Length: 123
Image 1 (cartoon, rainbow, N blue to C red):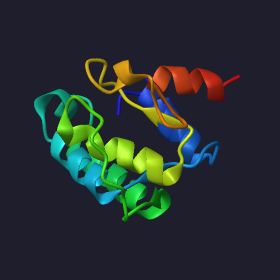
Image 2 (cartoon, rainbow, N blue to C red; image 1 turned 90 degrees about the vertical axis):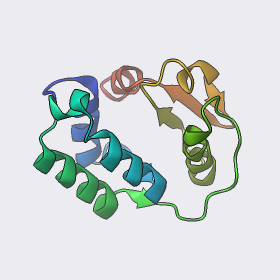
Image 3 (cartoon, one colour; image 1 turned 60 degrees about the horizontal axis):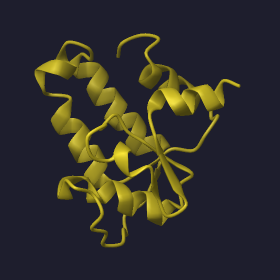
Image 4 (tube, rainbow, N blue to C red; image 1 turned 60 degrees about the vertical axis):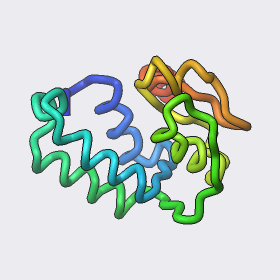
């Protein structure tokens, strides 16, 4: 990971148990897929990517039964809203400025950037 970048610092906050992280198999599958792209390969070594997925699977709260949601302009992102709804999450953290972030909220969940959540946690 890029050291000291907001996602890395958020990951450290999570490991310090400063917030609860939720995930689902669809998200873990997507993470495995995207970490193989050149953009991420420059920032995250394959071993680090594998450890990240394993840590998430082992330590995050996993939701398997997700409601059917059709909310995102990109249907491939609908599982994120389903996960947020199932977990009654306070925040959905994303870097997807074109689709997900523009929606701002989903039910009780605020849609924010990693930087935004990090600022809240570091206060």
